Amino acid sequence: MKEVYTEYNFTVKPKNPATEILIAELAEAGFENFKETENGVLAYVLSEKDNKNILSEIYVLDSIVFDISYKKKKILPQNWNTQWEENFQPIEINSQCRIRASFHPKKEVEYDIIINPKMAFGTGHHATTHLMMNFILEETLKGKTVLDMGCGTGVLSILAEQKKAKKIDAIDIDEWSYKNTKENIILNQCQNITAFKGEVSLIKNKKYDVIFANINRNILLNDIPEYEKSLAKNGVLLLSGFYEEDIPMIKEKAFATGLKYVDQKIRNHWTALKFIKS
Image (spheres, rainbow, N blue to C red):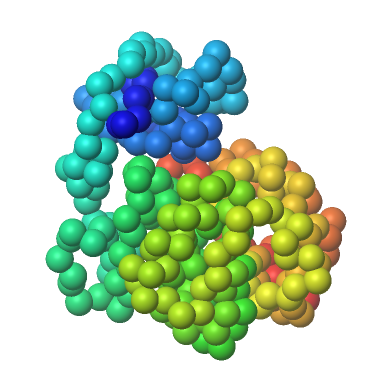
């Protein structure tokens, strides 16, 4: 029996960067497929998950900067893989890394990553993933141990393996993300990545040379002390999943644990920060 979805048709003014922020927050709320339109975005969620509280934590809807409205309706079952293939385009980062689906032809780049997700998130298209990959491309990972917290599709872990990291733990609390990471590990013939379903408690008593955490602000603020405990001396912590205005509170929390700020990157109001443990 095919699954029934509810379609939310969002009208967004101005479209940028509000649409990108909206998609990111909807993905965290459980929406599984997105298609940008001339006036905004279509977003799809399983009808069984659609309830009166599903938009309660979509904070961009309350923004005084953007005007966002929506209509919704149940839709007939359809082939979501076909929808995905029609809408997903490969993305290149710094001419070094190319992220594509398995149905796209391979091109000669230093890092070729195959990602077959079921929604347009965690592929490098979103600003936070793009920012993290830029940082990772700058890092020397050969022979290092890596943690990818909130791994999503596993794209950051796969890049880490291609950069010769010797051991990567990829963790996500979401069942879909855990399974999709395992699928993408196989697609990319990775040998050094282990996927886990769970949260930060899984890293207790473990040590990593580099930690990636692309989650959301509140989880990061809660978990930064645990990341610091699990970082080896001179270890690198890369954080993303928050806006420019969140930078001061993220820095404050990191400084309280003794971490040292190194650098930041910004894209469409989203940001990524780099810290080291001295």
